[in-house]
Image 1: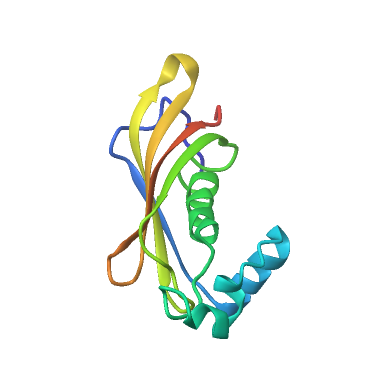
Image 2 (image 1 turned 180 degrees about the horizontal axis):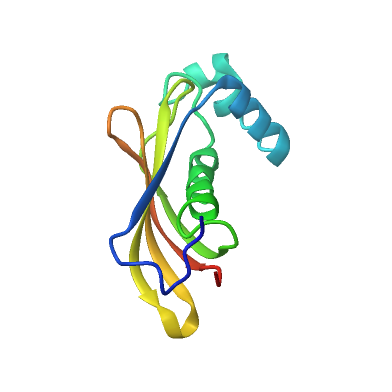
Length: 138
């Protein structure tokens, strides 16, 4: 289901959860070309401040895109912009929940501003931000 700007309300929310796997990390590295050893080389990553491999920040941020494109506002939404802050590392095996909340609406321009946050299974915010989108005309 999709929501037009006229069907959205401030405070409306939707979420999507996914457990991050080793396969996800390697696939993301291969697709993007981001082969940073902090993500794919355990001996190297053990020597970092994180003491082990971490998932790409943009992998978690991609879950926000899944919420926007599939749930709120939903299919047909055009992503106009995203501000992100990476607050805590994501490790293989973490379950990340991306949540999108409608912050404000501009029906005249067919625009919505959304608060975006990803949390891990312990409720720790790993990514926060704000998205600007053009909802579909349903």
